[in-house]
Length: 153
Image (cartoon, rainbow, N blue to C red):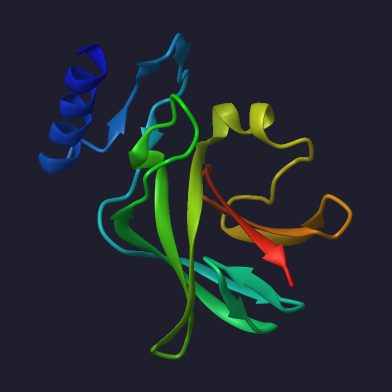
């Protein structure tokens, strides 16, 4: 019942334009106000150096504009907030070449998520992880981090 009530609060926050919030979920409190953009947002351009899989589809190496969509993803992680899991599109021109889920992480929480320092505000980094099995696209926009994990392939 508490989860249902809490979910209602988040839906109301989004519906009424209140996109910054502090929340406690499953005993974990987000210590920073999370600024979650409404609607679509261009996050920047990244270069994918090798072929990867995005949502089960092949994404060829190349330059891509990364766009955050308004569509929330259902998080697999217990206690994760759906508003912090959003779909992004990898675009070349007006064509969408692939989609994947991005995790939105506030600046105050990024040290709990990543072992290395993130890119500076307004920039991005693409790096291989776990013995070159995964690629992370890490975009920092005004202190809000967008982490996208792709399977190398």
